[in-house]
Structures are given as structure tokens and as C-alpha cells.
Length: 111
Image (cartoon, rainbow, N blue to C red):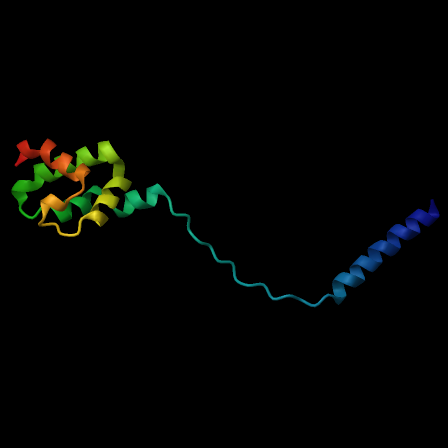
């Protein structure tokens, strides 16, 4: 029994010596990368942003709101962002993606 206690104490002392003799390692600063989620997209591309891009004349507000609501219900906010990236020429409605054309037709009575 005394021999076992001796080995435990010797092992603990040896471990302490090894730890003390080890060179200190520099630690790099911790970098936190935020996770990109749908919530970020929703916050960054809000209804307000969509309306700014759509409403050129205050009389179009109801129409723009209708198209936003239609698109949000049918393809979601991420889909609206995707559509915005696909539109090359905002003046060429014929080149708009089909989902956007559907919203235009759906909300035509608001014009």
C-alpha cells in the first residue's frame, strides 16, 4: 500500500515538473464568425427596403405593398432577395423572373 501511495505522489510531482518545463504557447486571439441565417437576410432586406426600390411615385405604394406581400407569401423573403438579384434591367418587365410577373399580374388592380 505504501508503494502505491509513493507512485501516486511521484507521478503527481513528475506531472507538475513536466507542466512547469513546458514552454508557454502563444494563444491567438479568438475570432468569432457570425452565423449567416435567414433571420439576417430578413433583417437586411426588410419590407422597407423593398418599398424604397419599388415606390417611385406615392400613388404606387398600394401596388408595391401588394407585390411585396404576394411575393413574401409565395416565395418568402429569401426568394424576394433572389429575384432582386436576377433582375438585370428594372425597366424591362419582360425580362423579369416569372414569380415577379405573377405578382405584377396579381396586383394589377392596385395601379
